[in-house]
Length: 395
Ligand code: PMP
Image (cartoon, rainbow, N blue to C red; front, side, top):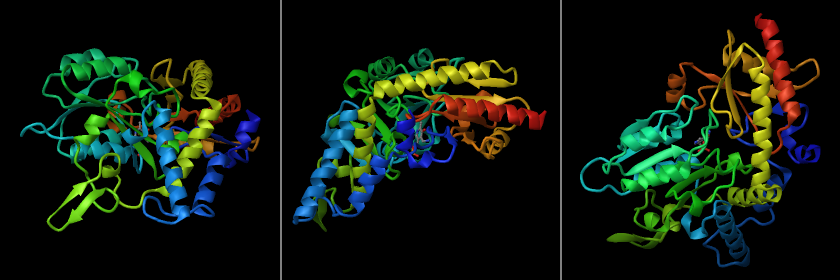
């Protein structure tokens, strides 16, 4: 574990980083790959007739296949986007309407704003599925709500606040029974558990590289080939066309149709290096490691009578909680101050871009600790020591 942590320059100096659900620290291998792509290997893709560009194109397209492979898909089913947010916006904009009625989507009470606002902006009629008492999407309620009027069910695979995991095969069966498609916001899941498009049975899967130990500025939308092919482009420009004239333009097949302009070449190469890094450790090993840490942290917090825990026991990599009489921002600020042993702890405090969920929980904010490949027991010990320090300050 020490050797693994040493590969992350961002973790140097006694910093206990418990905010991986917001964004993961980067291993040196990803930083090096990115620097090479920006330096000695740099050239554009899909355009140059010279060898360097052809090599970069091969490397870029190899990453597409690698990203798709991570989730059990094929390269031609995977669109590079700016991140999960852009991936969901793409579907919300381009998913074809059926007749005159507004398109209709079932979301859930625990969604991240990036799986709420795009549907609002694109004019969808939105229904909201409630949660179970332990913070899961209530699929019994979803079953009762869904009718053939729905075009889409769009929900988080893993909640970024509660860590709750969706029963995807059941969600897919419920959506498909009424003729709707299933979009999963896989931002938190893709970095924490094995994901397989053929086994899950969803229709769209959106995620971001930066939560998967890769760079910011790139992510992916996986879509069932038939569905992507039926969707019109949402942004126009170079690279997404077949033939352009002033009389009219025809478009490339997916995924190119959805990738207007010069893509995030450097970031894509870093994304590929991140996936190699994750696969080198093994996503099952990461899942087991984070499950152990979640169990330990929940047990330590449950021993205190001034802490309320949110979310289910088997949360994936994420623990949200509240401390009696202490606003999460105050807790986060005190944790960030240097402790007597020289350590600092970074947690997230706030609404986590999930204001409707905060309303459901009846709190303005929560404190959230989230784990990654590099997290260990010392992070939990530093957090608990920081909570005790905070208690002494607040009395
Ligand atoms: N969905 C979930 C569940 C997330 O955790 C996040 C990032 N916090 C997003 C969507 C948005 O991802 P990005 O900002 O990388 O587009």
